[in-house]
Image 1: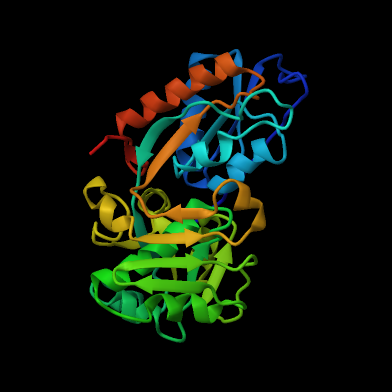
Image 2: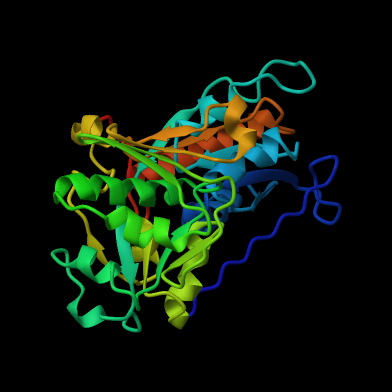
Length: 327
């Protein structure tokens, strides 16, 4: 199985291709949506031959920063954590013309799993019952995405914190995460609540932890045996044919009924840039969000494509994030 992630962006000042004359709609989706986006692009362009959809995937925080910090021209923003949109885009634009976004629509749900392959250490004995013990072994390498850039990263940390409560076990987060970082995060525990304050730089110091900018960038490492296990979204694991174990709904961030339990854990991002927009990410059920920025070059066409994305998600394709519902 070969995993290839190709991201191409060609943005012109006028928003149209010089060679085709088509209207170019630039989309920045969370990396976990790159596979579904490829399908939706092809289907939409077949229905609208005058439109050229171009996608560039990033971690969810980076998706928004393309618009708010780098001031790049994107017509649609799609993130894996809906709460990032009001937190990071309902803020004043530098040109003084309102905010970067005024609304968004919940798009889809997902769940956290632990993905692995036949090359993974102890793959034949890895189960829902013993995953914590195996991930703590000194010769096991675990991968997460960078929580400063990607929602999957801070959600992986939340899963470990929730697991300590659910299984009534100590030291899980410290063994897998803290001891493998050059600067250990501060963990404040009070009964069932836990808050992690991350250092500004997420540099690893031990062989047991590997960090990449986005969750999809862990896939090639898994395939090559560079890491043994990775915290991933279920849709990503299924899309790429990875083995994985499901986790209890009390800790996998999938189920609204457990929202109060998820809320017991939080991750504070150490990057100082986030201090003005709220650096604390609180555990909550996974919901993707989609918005058309107020800076969009083609807002009308962006809205039309956003509606198409919503309708496509509602159809419920295999190996995609599951359709959004309030329950």
